[in-house]
Amino acid sequence: MLIIGSHVGFNNKDQLLGSLEESLKYGSNTFMFYTGAPQNTLRSKINDDVTKKAIIKMKENGISIDNIIVHAPYIINLANNKEDDKYNFSIRFLKEEINRCEELGIKYMVLHPGSHVGLGIDVGLQNIIFGLNEVLKADKNVIILLETMAGKGTELGTNFKEIKTIIDGVNNKAKIGVCLDTCHLNDAGYNIRDFDKVLDEFDSIIGLNYIHCIHINDSKNECGAHKDRHENIGYGTIGFDNLLNVIYNKRLENIPKILETPWIGDYAPYKDEIDMIKNKEFNPNLKK
Image (tube, rainbow, N blue to C red; front, side, top):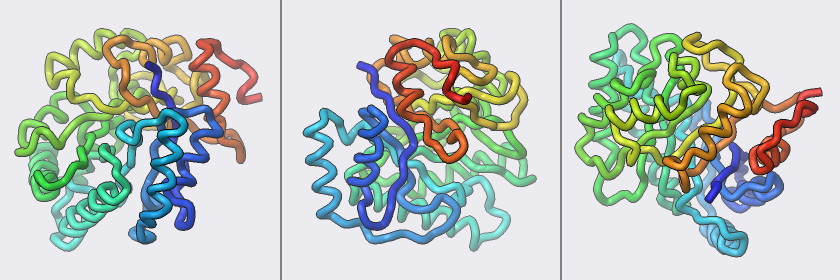
């Protein structure tokens, strides 16, 4: 079954119901959202009545809440413990986001592993492990998905071995997983044009059973550029057919695929891109 959707908004009033209704306009059967602005700590109280209405409407439209994804805010950086206050803030705020997911009934939260900001790869990885062990508790249902990163600056999680190191250090293995990002993989140096080989490598190092979400993005950059610049589906260096091979790969069946492609001017192109994916036919007029 194709489970496809996109990033959508989440506002104070309509919350999960508003996110769902936006996704339905795009022809989606999954979606991803931030529970508040990704750059700050401002958060509205979760409205249980609105959440219940959203869950009822999901069932009416054949959408499983287990396929809905939350993205952790960018301001969390578990790799950097140069300043205790900032490091403790990241841990505390991640705990709060997990609690919000619990209130919403969301199972998966995607997290950027973090940037070591000069501390070095090994120290940064150990900081991430410590932080995750502080927040991944048995009494919580949320599973954190480490996102594969492009390698911009001092980002960690740029290669499968770094992700493996983090997972190995996490005590509660049932609460940790991975989110593949096609643009990030490309920019990190993985050849999406030979995606089965990429999956083989991932499987040998980590295991395909850890993959629970895939971000589907084309890239503005050549493979290995370490720049992280998303492009619309079929308009970048990865290409439409290669992204279809990711989306329809039998080994990734029933895993949510989420578009994070750029808006075209003031227009969200997700419905058109999802239509392209469903029809398996590239639309050369999308950006004209």
